[in-house]
Amino acid sequence: MLNLRHIVKTFLRGTPNQMTALAELSLEMREGDFITVIGSNGAGKSTLLRIISGLIDPDSGRVELDGRDITREPVWRRAAVVGRIAQDPQESTCAVMTIAENLAMAAKRGQPRGLRRAVTPAAAERFRAALAQVGLGLEGRLETRVGTLSGGQRQAVALLMATLAHPRLLLLDEHLANLDPKTGEAVMQMTARLIEANRLATIMVTHNMQEAIRWGNRLVMMHEGRIILDVEGAAKAALTVQGLIDKFHEASRGDLIDDRMLLTR
Amino acid sequence: MSQLHALLTNMLEQGFLFSFLGLGVLLTFRFFRFPDLTAEGSYPLGGAVAATLLVNGMNPFLATALAVLAGAAAGMATALVHTKLRINNIISGIIVMTALYTVNLRVMGRANISLLSASSIVGEVATALQRLGIPAREDALLTIVVTAVLILFVGLALIAFLHTDLGLAIRATGENETMIRSLGVNTDTTKLIGLAISNGAIALSGALVAQNHGFADIGMGIGILVTGAAAVLIGEAIFGDRSIERWVISAVVGVLIYRLLVALALRVGFEPVDLRLITAALLLGALAVPQLRGRILRR
Image (cartoon, rainbow over all chains, first blue to last red; front, side, top):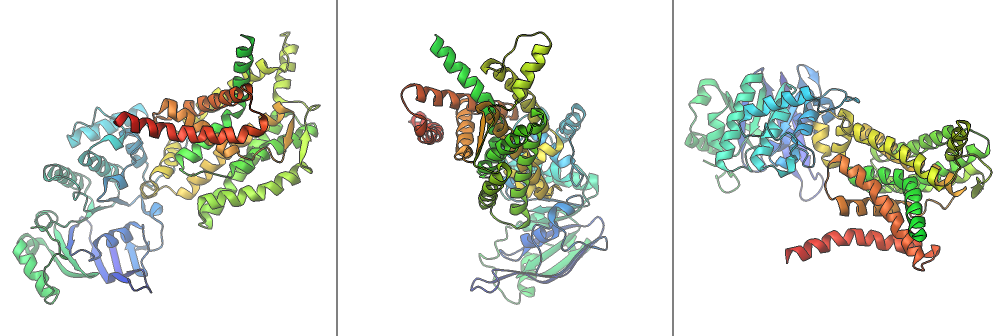
């Protein structure tokens, strides 16, 4: 469904700080794929997701969705098919607006917006039901401003916002990174449930190798803007953290796993 | 007693006339988070268009409506400069404001137009009431009633609008543009609509003030953005909260209080030439008081 062909992205080109984020990266994603992505800092993981969602343009290469070239489509045109959650809860929700208003905006994902009241009683009922499934006690707090919620609660709202209007593709950019382990686990369980229920094709960037092994049907390891490992199915199920570290050594040709790697066991 | 009466009458009359300015500035200053200097051109544009049409004998309601449309067009010009040419929003406002100075002179054909012998919205209402056998004159009281009805209508419409799907998208445009774009909103369009509404409302104040004061003048817009911002901030300092209803009400109340403070300043011996200094002081106060209050409370 999603096809990335030879994507190149360089930041600060022509300056001494020039950095190649993606170097001829290609990736083919099939219907129902749940890909976890790991890699060292600066490997280009976030850049990859930002290019797929249309937040930034690649220097060259093509992004195809269901055979359609969407490389130059602005982010708002892709919204109907792509939902993305960032690491920072501030980015994926609107702090000064209420939970209900945030969800109402998300419910209209990719649709024209007119002069109908956004939070109708029927919509509120729908939102309440969706929030109840999350199990964080948010269903009674539709009129609460999102800015007053905890990080985990905000990410939970962001998750509902990303999935409410059934996009084809869900992009998770270290969406658990700012949460404490317990909250992170709860949000991840909810993420998995929503992916399953909506049969969403998903790409999840994480710095946690165990999580990367545990979730999804396919694992991709990136290094310096390239994919250096791409395993799925039984081979992925057999992966271990030590195995991943060995593979990283092998594929990166002896680059040491130092603090640049920043992978959590 | 009669002094207080005169003071309150003045506050309500001038306050309601300027309240649309408060709503317009609220939209850009608070929701879009930038000081939109287009106001300095769209406010006199409203006055200029209304005045020119009125001296040519047009119906005051129609003339005022066209003034609002002219203001909306000015706001759209700023939005287009900002979004299509990717020029900073403040600079875009300054460019359009500067261009509007000439436009306003061209519209009026001279630097000011007297409206003393022309009809006005309040005059029309007075005539209509007289025809119904109700004794009414074009005075401060009737002006207050007419503008109060108008601001009630416009305020409620704005509140309802800001709760629609489109209204939510416009609010989010200023708060979290990346998010709302990721949800499928072309923020070029929401900015266009938001700035059109804002400057339409500001032009409405310009048109009403010109009719009330009996003239339109090329210089009537100088400092008007600061006036609007001061009013919005005064209202916020009192109401604080950020629900849409409270925000809209606080903008209107802010304008009323601003006018009261100005009237008081004139009464204690300041002269009209001191007005800008007073406005600046009020704005400074409205900005500084919440900060100082926070600092003192923390002790």
